[in-house]
Image (cartoon, rainbow, N blue to C red; front, side, top):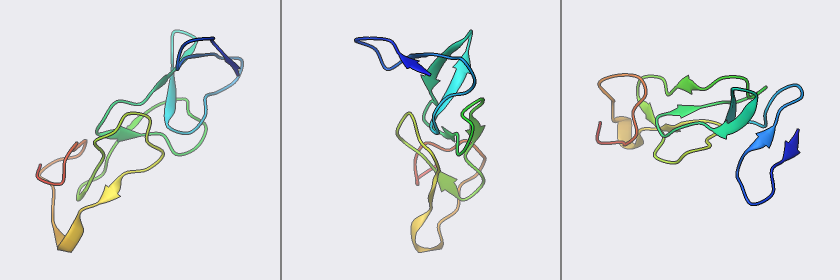
Length: 79
């Protein structure tokens, strides 16, 4: 993986860092509501009862105080 100067993108030779995914041969951050824990090849939606508001997440946050989300891919604990 080679960083592209002045960018958050990378040239991909194998896979991306956690929190990133491959898009047309370039590593890009996973969008809010998703994460990439391992090889960085694809972003996965946050599971039920978790959320992620930031881009580039390695994991999703569990809803506090037993809170629940209505669907996967939530970007806020209020979803």
